[in-house]
Structures are given as C-alpha cells and as structure tokens.
Length: 82
Image 1 (cartoon, helix red, strand yellow):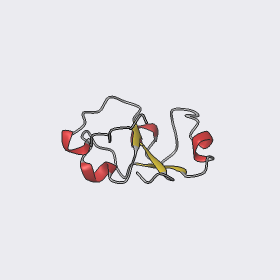
Image 2 (cartoon, one colour; image 1 turned 180 degrees about the vertical axis):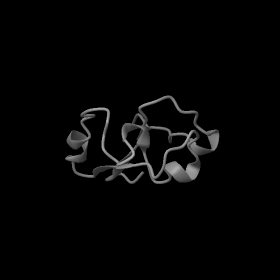
Image 3 (tube, one colour; image 1 turned 120 degrees about the horizontal axis):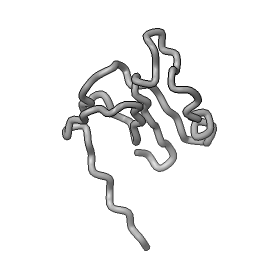
C-alpha cells in the first residue's frame, strides 16, 4: 500500500444480479470521500478468494462467510513505534 493511497474491495455478495446493493447503505461514501481512499467491487462472485482477486487491495469487506485461500493473504508489515 502506498502511504498516500488506501484501496478497499467489496465482495459481490453485497450485490444482486444487476449489480445493485441489496444490503442497504454500508456507508462506503464516507471513507471514499477522504483523500487517497477508494473502494471497488471484486470482479466476480467466488467461494474462494485468490491472490489475483485481491491484488492491489488493502482491505476486503465481505457480507457472507467465505473461505479464503491462504495464498491471498499477505502479512502486514511491522509498525515501528518510534
């Protein structure tokens, strides 16, 4: 993640077949209004998230329980306290 950019992904389980949000207002407009923050829907519905599905994303929000492939997970870098 670049220091000036944060990109979140939203699972397609929030959407109906026509791409409309069926879960109500999940308030993505508020963080998206902040400088350097963006979000996008994942490209397809899947039972397993692979690295390619989350490439370039800093966080993923899913509505339902989904198994996640270990290959898709990247450890967070250590944070310096000083």
